[in-house]
Image (tube, rainbow, N blue to C red):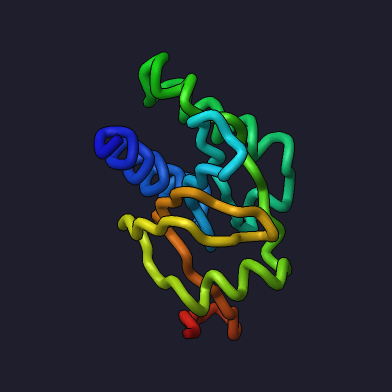
Length: 134
């Protein structure tokens, strides 16, 4: 599992550099999932063109992961940046390009057996300056 998390961290960093920052990039293993991970993401660049953004992210995954690793992924879930549950995650977990492991929690109304939060960072824009809020 550590290899998959390392690869996901690398993908997140590369995509952040190429497309723009994520406010959330995480892997969730739902309680009702058969060892299939959801990739849960939120980013303003994804909201501009959801279909193209998800296709781009899927392409990056296919290019970076082995077949067995790809088979362990269920889906990519886009969370809109205005989602109140996203704000809750940002208040509890603040990390960027790292990995915070969480077990037995509830996110977005779903029981999550296991999660790796790679980036959770709330952004407030004031002019051209970006600040991180707790």
